Length: 434
Image (cartoon, rainbow, N blue to C red; front, side, top):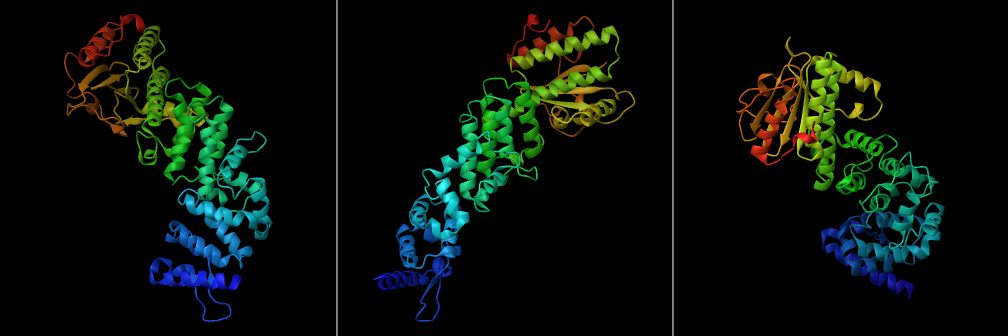
């Protein structure tokens, strides 16, 4: 009979009180008529979810007393355990599915619409819903779930995180490509809360999903400029510059980090060339010199010979960058990272490019400065990604046959290219930069 089944199940659960793991699961009252009372609130993350036999006993004990509050509590356990306890989730789903109508409208309607209590379908249904073009995503996944009528908090549950990751994988074709800037923007919208923060930023798997979707498609192909600008600015804003603060980038795959580092290397190179042009004298000789410089280092970048790059700005260069940032609402302005050159009357206009090319550190000065080269093991070699450099930091102890003066006829390029080739094997021919 129902009563005998209930009492038998109750007895088994009460007997588990010999183990402190299960003490919170059962609230025992001495009233002989009401008997034990079971709370679903204590199931989340408990050992009970790993013992399927005991969980079944628990469900058998409450089957004839399952009402709204208890069922809603079990539903919360279900959405919060779908990744960590898949077997328990399957058992809870089988128990909850036929009783969804007894949970109240807030659970009953989404249970039917999205197959909420079918763990083999619900993730796919909700992920597809997140990617629908007629669903507004600008407030993030939590707002979408609220608008869809899902109970509060589902977006922040294990189910919400799994749906989010699946949607991003589909949007980026499993990290293989981003077909348009609209798809990239959709992924960013889904990943952003209405406060402008990264959704569930503290969960490594979420950070992994976002960076996989936005960066992995560009491992072997160049990102279109509008997509790169959008993605680069967003990730720098949410996760910061990985060259300066790598803590938030720990969950990210090395392949995705490599894409971001490649973009930032190019950004530093273009910042050097662009800002130098702004603060340089505009005579014909100077313009020709910067044209040579740009072609030379861009040739190394095209061949992927520049592993890392960093820019150091004198006071006038900093003023120019701040002007760019103030006038620019998006990348590159909002994403620029650079170091400062300690002020001196003779270097206010100077801008310095620090490059890592294989085992070499190359420092190229603007204006009347020279190009210096060190092996990276040389104790005098400048370290990349510092915030402040002196003139001595960027010149002292450089190795022969340098340093190289930027002669107007461009002969310095052959000398620098030979030095790099002799030490690294990385060769750029003159017809690639002339």
